[in-house]
Image (tube, rainbow over all chains, first blue to last red; front, side, top):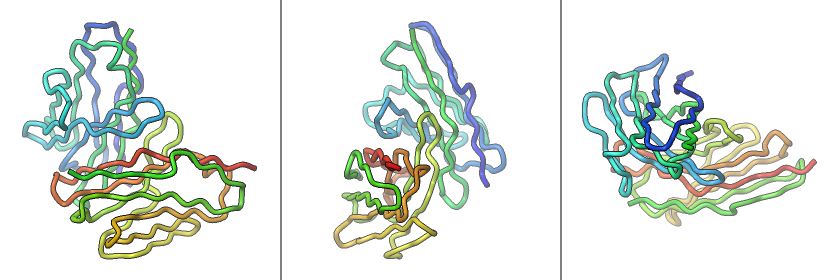
Length: 114
Length: 113
């Protein structure tokens, strides 16, 4: 089956620093990748949709200058949380779709900002 | 845009009994409705899905029904087992929106032995 990986699986950073999270589709080419944020005991909230080679489409209320998304290839998308603050601490999950449009989720990255 | 409401938020059933989780959606053009199971700290796992041209789908102990007229769909788990304990999310995929999914709020299912 389709496999999506994320790196790192967890990260702790100091307030004001930036953190980059990678999302890779390991055995298929992802036409589209999605980034979600999930706070404890809450649902997955879509942050943005990215297509290879084009600018990401951000959901309403998501700051595009704070959450930088780069979709450089059909197998890699990155999310950079810039100038992170404690309120950015969350579980970040990516997903990727193939030509069937089924979404395959990555294992998630737990970000803690101190 | 699409809005998905999921109920109940928590559900506790005895092992061996059935569990039903319900979702409603707002966009009549949505055409794909997956259900995901998420264990603590893990990724969501697709357990079953249904497309808008089908009314019911079953996979062993799990079934999903879709009522397009009423814009609601339900997950049915029969003969529940302790390993069914998890958080379940429904989702809907609007026709417009680059294949994105809109998720319900989630249901925490607990199976009591």
